[in-house]
Image (cartoon, protein in one colour):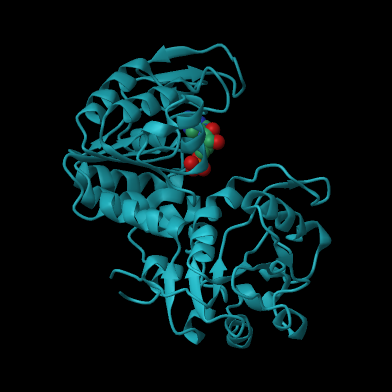
Length: 389
Ligand code: AMP
């Protein structure tokens, strides 16, 4: 069901509550922002609201304060950084609800940043009273925090019931547009490349995508559970014994769609620059740490003819060179394919960046967990809550 976007809302003269994702990495006891990427990602929606004549209230969580105030997880440093980036004042509230905050309600053209929503246990509990208090601050609601859209919290779901209209912010809208495009009638052939450590983390994603795509390429440690389920030796590779039956079942039902590695880069040690070799069959005592060159070639062939690509998870232990080669090669193949490509998960994002091809990917998702849930076919609560068009 299509949801309202911020562009559908009449923001002029209104107070808009924007649920942003300012869950940034901090150092020095919470004083220093080590990456302002998420703050920058919210700027288009904030600037758009101000340009439309709104007063802006920003709410976010930061870290896991477990329902209590914690100076190390205060959003104060973010207010200063945001003010610099916006080139205008940002008022910082001492809390996110209560009379002091209500007295600070911004006027047209002003920006108020609320203190960490998770300083109140009611946020994660999706408490109706707390939701109502948050909603009382605003006339309209916008959710731009895709990364928390898979959580039904007060600021992502609860408060929406108490506002007249709720729309997706520009960042959220882009996420939904791309993820919907690649999963609903994708231009064919549509393929998915899945990797990473565990089958168990991605069972729902595999089960859903296998029905949508034409080919499913599996790399990373996940592949060894599939290979072992076919009776192949996997040495010391990471295998989830309790998922062997599931892997076997998926292969028996969708074997013609699923492509597994045909060779591997193996080593006896799990460390950077450990001595390694390429093998077709993993010897005892060795572990598979990357896909081999023949697999890279086979995968690249499928990738180059794809029109739609969904990629989540690295093909090997890409943090430890030389076991990054397979992942980097896949990143290059995806970038060169000319397909509509959506990449999700922090590791695949790092891989496309380190390969220098991020600008040739159609969309890099900002929410790891949320994008996985979307790909598993579940409607995200934070999206479901928005007003229908
Ligand atoms: P995920 O968070 O599930 O996407 O998994 C990412 C992690 O999987 C990365 O830290 C990789 O190092 C790890 N990984 C990928 N391939 C392998 C492998 N063959 N053996 C062990 N770990 C792997």
